[in-house]
Image 1 (cartoon, one colour):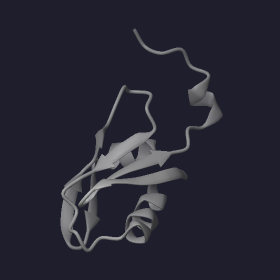
Image 2 (cartoon, one colour):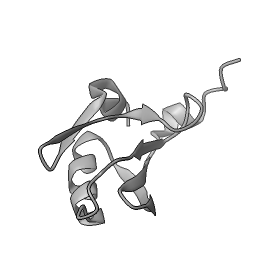
Image 3 (cartoon, helix red, strand yellow):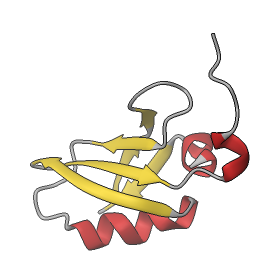
Image 4 (tube, one colour):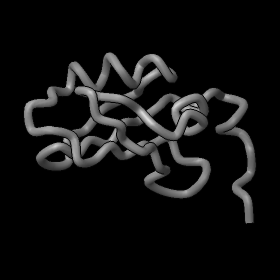
Length: 82
């Protein structure tokens, strides 16, 4: 997940999309939006797996996906930032 957030962009179907956190800083979810309607989950999965281990992908709407990355155990044990 950190790799995905570090690069800040993903290219998909010759378009460049910004990566932003969908929740609090310790979240494992990245929302991809404005993807073309022809984009399939398998395409999104193959691209996102380059940046970390995936836990799940959920299609939220036409061209909108939430990508859930697995959090390494060292990050899960940290206390939330105040």
